[in-house]
Length: 379
Ligand SMILES: *Cc1c(COP(=O)(O)O)cnc(C)c1O
Image (cartoon, rainbow, N blue to C red; front, side, top):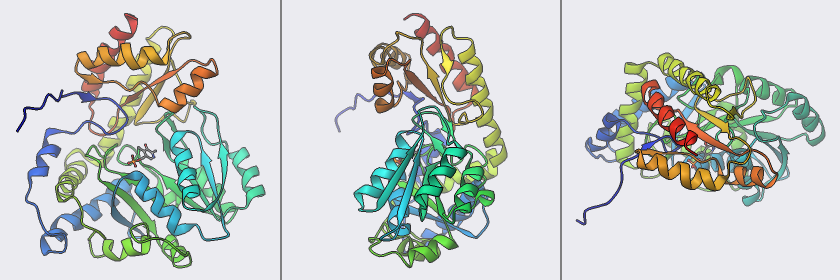
């Protein structure tokens, strides 16, 4: 084989994220047949531990859908929005917009409610929109990865319920990083993926599906095949996937969930994420001219967005800062492209992101922040 010239980098982007050596090594566990008895040895604990990480009971069925987070979002839209119904796409950034793009691409009738970058969903504005639109389904993002904003899932879901609509939540970048409050919020369906706060390679969309979603899907036409949650549920209930999974990733997910639940402990994991948010905020306050970007009270436990001093350009972030950090062994996140392009065009101060999710430790983060501080001060 040709010798690769791949550079090992510590990933401080917002996904994919840093993978522990033990989680990598779990990919070396024996391959298996996905309809064989060996499959259930991995999948039964995976299903159980997904419930433990999500803190849900068996009223929610977890499922692994081949693909990634967007695949699970598409399954939700295709299975839950019926012909003639309106879906309301509530968005606070680029990943919120994605739900709307998926709806339109599937011919679903969709209205959008948008909030400014850095702001969370404002319940008063949402209420007025719900009164006007009267949607059947409402989608929103629990943790907006492009802006570092976490929405109040309990408050937003309960408001949506007041109007008889069904909440569907994208929690791709927060699952495994905090108490999701799903039992309290009662979304019809909650979706995530493996490569963010679960700290594994990408390869599965993960969904938690409530009974209500199952009943609704039976009344929706043209759900597709792999995007049909009823097809997926039939297999998930017997601890299988609908189509052939990446068996290496199944082994890794088995090992990683066991580590999260039985070694680190779910509550400790959540506390570690909260501590890294505080650690990053403290670093930002020590950096002259830099400020936290996300709305106070809605700052994400899994990533922090930092607003740069006026005059610092996206070009400087993408070239100077990113390449200096690469030379120091890190992959820096120069901000979400579309968001920064719009901010720069409007004459606003641009942002960069610090991913502190998954298996990154406070010690790793401290080193990273020190290096990044040096690079930014040298600008
Ligand atoms: C990463 C991300 C997605 C997209 O997920 P993929 O796994 O890349 O398909 C969707 N929503 C949010 C909030 C994300 O962070």
